[in-house]
Amino acid sequence: MKSERQQNQETDLIADKIEVFLLKVKQLLPQIVSVLAVVVIGLLAWGLYYSMQNAKLSRAWTALYFSDTTPSDLESIAEDFNGTQAELWARQLAGDSHLAKGAESIFTNREISNKHYENAVAEYEKIVTKVDSGLLATRATWGLAQAEEGLGKRDQAATAYKKIARIENAESTLVAEASKRAEWLESAEGEAFFKWFNENKPAGIALPPAFPDQKPAIPGAATFDFSSPTAPAPGDSNGPATPAVEPPKVDGAPATTPAVENAPVGSTSTEPPAAVPPAVEPPAVEPPKTDPTASGGGSQDEKL
Image (cartoon, rainbow, N blue to C red):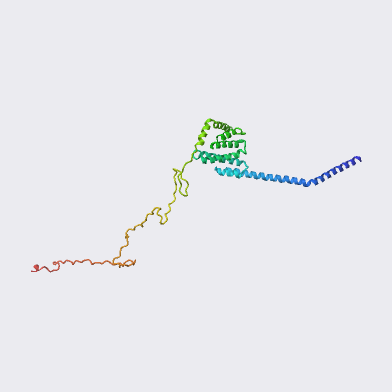
């Protein structure tokens, strides 16, 4: 009996504890539901954001892959997909394109060349501020040093070359080449060259003036204008003279209209004159010759 009573007491005690726990849970139920709702909403938002980022990154790489190599197109892709890895590579390619265009005109038109080099510096600097290791950082820093060289800034170029050696996971080939380049820039030979380079700035190639509504002509270039000449306006004496075209002559036809004989003075009639038949003269008929011997009579001497 005692053990059974003790067992009932223990059962009642457990039931009381469960009841107390359920009362506490009931009181905290709104807070628990709110926390669970926040967690679920957060997970859904993160999944939606992750999906949108993946879609944006996919569009960015597609646009970069099928883009033109012009700097303006690459810069537009970088602005449209800001914050992605494709943006950084688009800026790298845009800087490389400006760098190549600057090198093309460095000894023909220094003003145009400097504009391209300045644009290249701007693109490379946007990369090195976001990436400090790996292949992209190495290439961007190398391009920055090259652009500074093109602008004639010897000290800035040497500093950029030295920075490549401190980049983590930098390409060993570029590190060795950058070290050699920085050493040459700081040498007396490099100083002399940049002094000459900054003092000699070509003005550019002069092109002949272009005709109205035409592009500038290039010396020695062939022209392929096959357009038909425009007929001059009436009364325009500057245009080419149009040769007179005579109608073809027909054989047997008179060159001019024959004058009408005996036409009265002042007559304006345009009807042709009546045709007059030509006078026909009868042919002359000769009398037949007669033989006197054949008629049976003879001459008077024979009769006698």
